[in-house]
Image 1 (cartoon, rainbow, N blue to C red):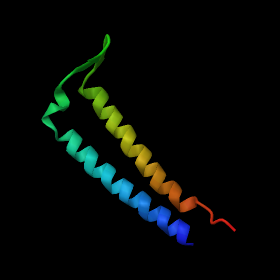
Image 2 (cartoon, rainbow, N blue to C red):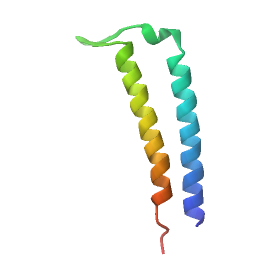
Image 3 (cartoon, helix red, strand yellow):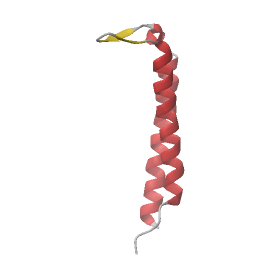
Image 4 (spheres, one colour):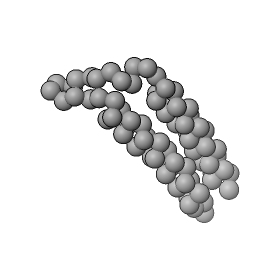
Length: 72
């Protein structure tokens, strides 16, 4: 029981940090700048996709923490 509770607390903290990070990243005025990686253009739309994927992964990890079984 203790391991499950610890895992849920850690995943909740990670989720809160992810929400704060995404909020700060999306409100940053530098989001509109384009970054070039070689010939690949990494613009604001791709940054938004990356932030959305990050938020989705964090929500999924938080949800998965409720399905972890205790070791016997």
